[in-house]
Length: 173
Image 1 (cartoon, rainbow, N blue to C red):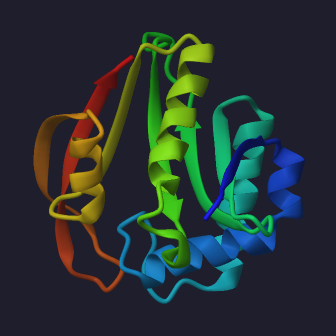
Image 2 (cartoon, rainbow, N blue to C red):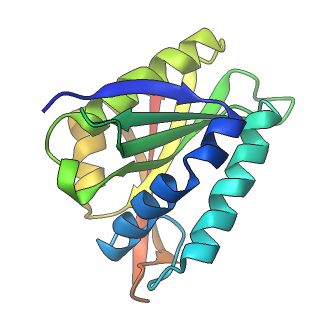
């Protein structure tokens, strides 16, 4: 399958809100530990994306999407560039999401490559992220060159309510 990737402006997030809400709900329903509990309501998911649009408008965040051949959003990733004054060289990677129908087709890898390029363009030299320990995402980050910094036990809850550890990763650009 063929995919295209692009950066969204804040108004584009709002015009594609339904697709982004669907993607977020699909990820949470699939068990992704991304800050939400299951079941995730459409209203809560929409409020999240509206808040993200504000971050993009304020130049504190970059949102990338992947689209399938029909133009439907099948993946997204975010780069949080708004950092404290003593960390202008760093950005956080957040909410790498790939719809269940598009997994294992290279979408996540392409989104991360595009995100790293956006980070370089913004003058960032260090990226950090966290993910659920033992998850497929942890395996993905290890395989794609991220360095494990450590594990924090009982850091968060999985969407079903079970406690889970988180693994911290970094990548020098």
